[in-house]
Image (tube, rainbow over all chains, first blue to last red; front, side, top):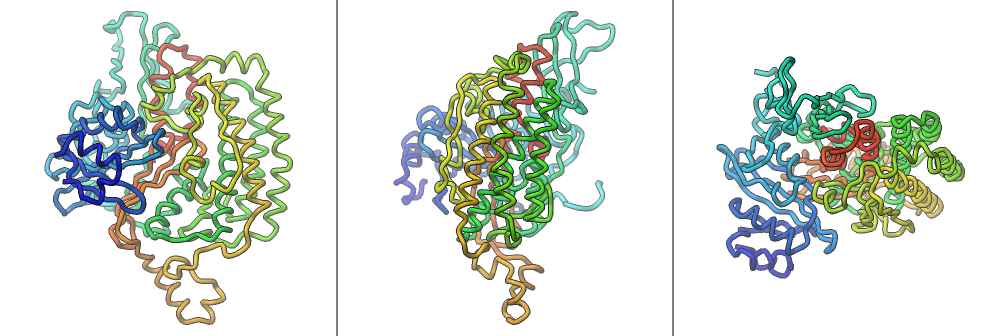
Length: 157
Length: 409
């Protein structure tokens, strides 16, 4: 459910009207709006935001590892609407074992490399991604460096 | 090499075996050590004669795990990491990161520090554009421009050295203001430079703008539609050269940019030449901003008053016990940043630079993600060079002005 205090924001209200079950939470903090989206609805919500709410730019996709908390991963999307002069953050929470989410490359082509980066450094798989390979690390690398249980120093085992 | 390791779905050619696409096709590796890629980037080009049928990119050669390293240093130490991302615009990176953390801390920055930040960031833009212009012209074959550009760049680096003691990795902006008091005599130095600079820009234009070879190599080359660029995540001068008036300094002003009078130049042709014109005009506009900042520089403190975050003055440390304790605490432990997350965007010379900083309430960031403009822009390469001639690839990727350190982080 969308928190009541967020209904005054046009975008949040529009997302709730579009799909009542999609927004599972959110906050407005330091002038920035965050909506938590159910992972299953991410592509439809992104498509709606791009085509109906004029968020034509996907600024970046990244992730945060909340290890050892559960659900472990947050996939974070930053959207930008040039016309509305607004930015919006979407967040999807994923469980730690075999995290997987639908790719938004069908909505914005720019998601391609960003999702590859998240796949490479966090080990989150994106379904229906056209080219899901490592991008920063070598192809034969083991492990995902930006996970919290990946050590910063020490020999490679 | 396994087929999975080749980007863009390009198939390698095995000797004595015809490729599925026919005998005329060949795959050419450009880079990772190609001079025009300015760093280490590998382009895989599938050619039909001299025409590019497909282009795949292979990056990550300069990946140093900077985002991971952010998590093990404290907030103030992390400023030094931001320099090393986009090494041609270190102060822009410093600014983006500091603004993000200051937003988390809800810290007010005194006017002098804000204006000083604007002035130095604009000098950084000049520095970055000069390196771009010099190397871009060098790639296309205009060697003398490179020498002229580096002559002026040297003056800017000397100004940076005067302020921070460093030419490139300045780390001059700190969370809470500036690292050091602005040096004596800075205004004369900056004035001398910007008084002479506009005529230097004329000089570059004399060499290039009406030069038939330059026009032949850049006009109509590297065309791309605005919709495609927006969809592929391109930002900055490339969008402005396609007619979109977008600039974070105007749209989402930070660090008092709203107090400065400047234009956002645009062109509509969206080719290599238009990007050149946009950047040349940006240099003139940046000079205007530097002049306004220099002439109107407000007096007052150059760092915030919050003693939990900003190091105390040396004098106070010698006389006040409390100042000494705060100094000890900040140096040994760092300062705590309230829990939360912010996404701060600034206009770097290359486009939209975003810092996503997540804090868990400790003295080290929980996560820092950099949305770097080079990474976003580079993604459009395959699309841009498809169907063009191989000689134009150099001009096209030169016009994107990417820095591989910024791409790979």
